Image (cartoon, rainbow, N blue to C red; front, side, top):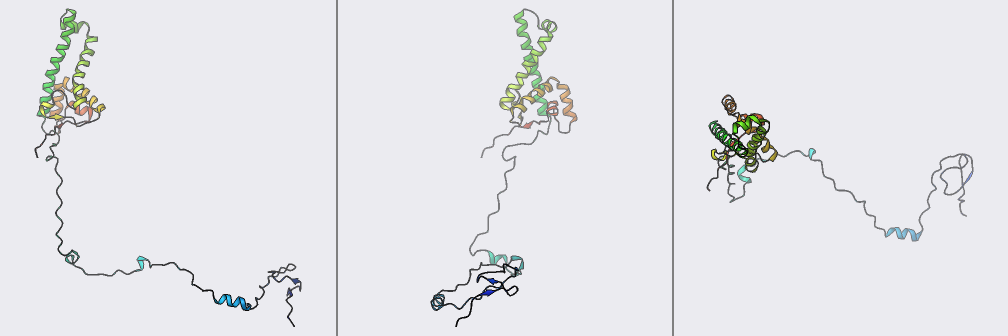
Length: 239
């Protein structure tokens, strides 16, 4: 005689399906049905299944939780046997050793440069004024007084070309190379600007000389107006 497998709700005695999880009438949650014992062929199959433990990740303790161990080791023990001590680092070459000098400390080279260029500028302007006067058949003084509105811009343009061309190409005015002075600036725009203010400084040489005397760093009028500074030209050294 076999036991009946019919399921009923313990609350409302409603007939239930064997796989029902709750009563459709009263909504009572039902316990899952009891599973019977496995049959012989099922039990023999489960006996041959290898039960392996689930894989677990390897974990390491946090470094902050590990207590530090103090070890007394002398520096001699850490050195390799037979190893030579490291050579001392070579000192960096100084700017003087490379042939570069600092700013011109004495104002005499700058005074010589501007004085010489002032004489050169007077000579060039005299020549530039004499040529058109000779072509027109008048004296230079009469040409200057009669057409000064045209002559003055003409002389200023000639003077600026005299300073601008070598300044843009080499960074030096016509006579700076003779006295070892240069402008350490590679930008063409800054060189053009400095050539203009340097021309004004040469034209106003007495005022520029006064600026060099009063300024602690002996800067010329062109250096004060442009913010740039003339330096001693680097000299080559034989190795």
